[in-house]
Image 1 (cartoon, rainbow, N blue to C red):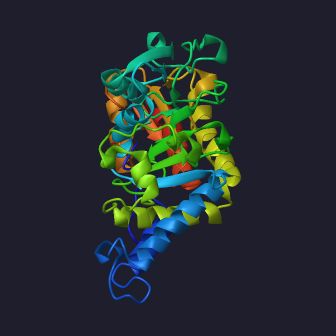
Image 2: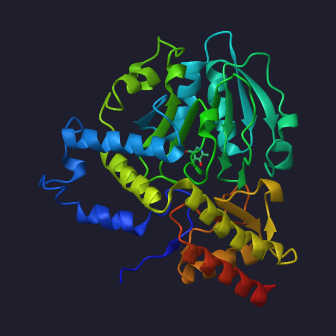
Image 3: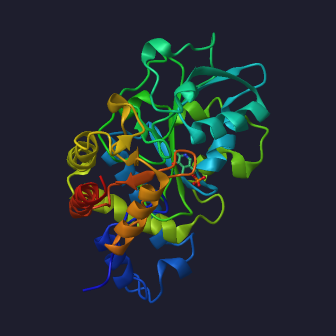
Length: 362
Ligand SMILES: *Cc1c(COP(=O)(O)O)cnc(C)c1O
């Protein structure tokens, strides 16, 4: 048996073991070509097949038609913070942002450099413990688009509803919860995600864009930053992060084999509930950061009574093969990232460890 830990890191994050094994099997000789995907031309028929099947699988899993196109870009979700206003925020127009955490704030800051923005709602005053309700959202008069962050990786909150913004294009950063649950995806005009949380390795960023949105995109921008240029070239405008796209395709196959988003979503709920139940039953020893109704199924954030016990928690867990549990410095405490690829057994082991730790140190 190969040595594997339960890896709760927020990203780059754990990948399905069978995906790694399949990649290992095909590493030296991809399907009789005598080379790996890393070494193959991105213009080859074989690589084109990888891109096309990854796109088709992504749309199928998300329940989207070919009204949408999937792009495999680079630069991380962070480049999308800039590309979105560059392409879709023309002079004179205003873009609306809903601030639910650090990445949402970074997205806004990039847009501010490029055009007019409006904060339609913010959870900053509660230290990003909550997600604004529809009533709390105050849109500007006629926004070019509305931007949300569907899951807040650092604070551990997640949108449980899709905000209604009428005909205005809704844009979502889904870096840390894409493909984690069933969602009415047709409500979005553009969705993006760095792959390294829930989709695959770092290096590729997935953009799912409604083709009709492309028609209004800015024209006088560098091609490398233009969705239109990437869409017309079907993600081969320049050399893509080819090996990452290949692994991503394997992950998409794996999601499909697991039963798609309905089955994955149910399993993710069950996994998160295992940890939240221990928190809720701990009589305040473990204190969740997020409000109960806004808690994320992907990133569970909580504090312990003091720094010493938080430090001991992460250290002792690591000794038992439960690694990557230290929280982000802006929240402190513990963060357990329970992405799709984290098996139920890993979450059960963490829940068991939490109970034992409480018994010893509570
Ligand atoms: C990690 C993360 C990012 C940043 O992604 P990069 O790929 O490192 O640029 C942005 N948004 C969210 C929600 C994230 O979790």
